[in-house]
Image 1 (cartoon, rainbow, N blue to C red):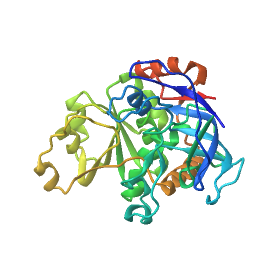
Image 2 (image 1 turned 90 degrees about the horizontal axis):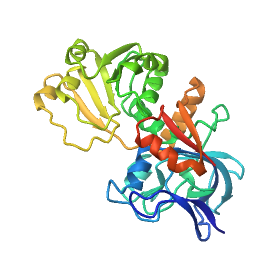
Image 3 (image 1 turned 180 degrees about the vertical axis):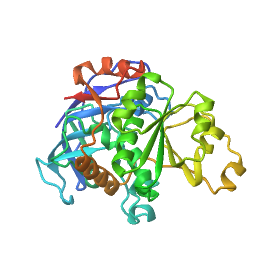
Length: 334
């Protein structure tokens, strides 16, 4: 068979129609007929080879929603025609300590959906069966794709660090990741503080569930939030006043990095030590975490705010993303 998609052949080139032969379906593989696929900043980074790991030609796309079209002989728990989603990871070894322990997203030999293989900007995509996550019927499939990447990325710390409904949670950056983090924190029962550098986003942040707004460029405003938060989720990828951000945490508070900050983060040990603060980060989530996140989203009617483009307008969609105009996630319709 031939899979038809859209591929980039070199950095700074537009995506073009592309076909490839995926070969025989493996025993652990699921083939998915793609209906919708989110466009993420990670796709843009891979298109430009910003991380130095891109192999060309590349079919991007790792926020896939579609229906199972074919199943390998070893697959479990799925059926043809079932609607599933795929995120950043496409396979893992299934036998290392991390995989056996339920942390498959930390498998040292995992394969990522668009690293060294082709992703979801296509009519079909294949993944190992545990990474085809069933989509609850209560979720609008047209909008759900970004939950498989952005959603699980900001959901993971709530589950991993036993965040309680009585906790106070801050979210830095009200964008593609941050607006979902605010929605999750509010539905979790927490008091939510949104940190944003854009005054125009204050009302939107309140609409997503924020109780308090802090101007992230105003030192005085940040100081007023000192010692008020149990968890601070940083979703931006730019340098911040890290000492001021750490100072917003209560004793035993945690600063969690969900955004890919590329510059070193200067931290004084005493800012952590004297009140037992922590800094952490995490990549996406394991299949069970993704399933729990989707169930929680369905229960609380949590979906990303999206803009849609037809797949034929994929290059326009990428430019819209790079121009910073997306509000707040982009979905490509196949």
